[in-house]
Length: 375
Image: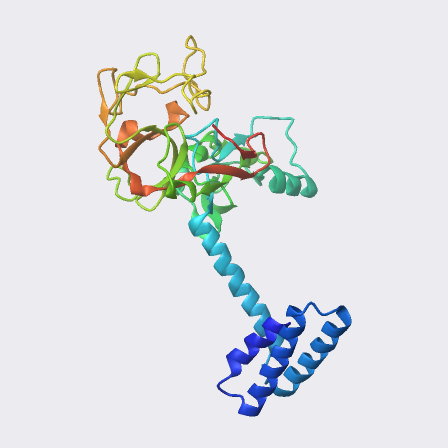
């Protein structure tokens, strides 16, 4: 209470009379003396009543005091939230499947060929969305027709910068009329769209034109604090900006990959799907690579399965003899989903100043990956 009255006095000192300033200062001194003197409760209560009476008499009331207090709390909350996001923890959504199965991007499951599928009720769909991040999409055909794949936009629009909105066109067989249909909150990734949109493109009356389940990508907090005090370690999952990486078209994106090579090192990949650092083979005993290199060497690489790191004909690492030299002050990164990851094998190194932090905690959806410690 004393500090609050002191604050009001300081903010109004230039508009209060000398008499008012003197009276409030005297009451504040008496209050402080009682506190410093370890006065009992009765004395403190009496001094508080005296201070309140003095402040009420001389301190000018603020107009819309409740609104002012609420706005002040709101602004302080925004500043605190921005500070946490800038210096400590930043929320991040996994955009693609390049880090699967460690961290998942958006996935879809098409139910058009499943005669046993039944659209869940509202309560079930709400639960699945809030807990597991699943969204169900279904459009039933009023008559025979086909999807006009030539008029499908590759990426959805952003409505209010929050919701995805995508328009598809269907052509009905009866009169050849083309009608637009809107899909809300669909996936961003064109590769996922191809799984539920392009095939099959013909439908009959009463059949679902679209019927699929979309599971949102993992949402996690990025630790922006740790790398202020140390350099990233090999094998850590880092988030970085694409700005300045010439081979990447979108220069305003954030990517997430596993750190493989540090500045001054030379990287190659063997036929056994293990990376080499200056000729030294990484394996399952290397910290942070227990899962990546824990695959069965007799098995073929599979999408969204740990399969090591592959040589790719379209990349810069096509044979075991090809190498990637990492310049000082730069890093090289690979995706865990090696058969479906555009990474340093294709576009080379990235400046270390592009790194904003490391994977810390998956907070949504609630799956087996919830929590921290994703390796």
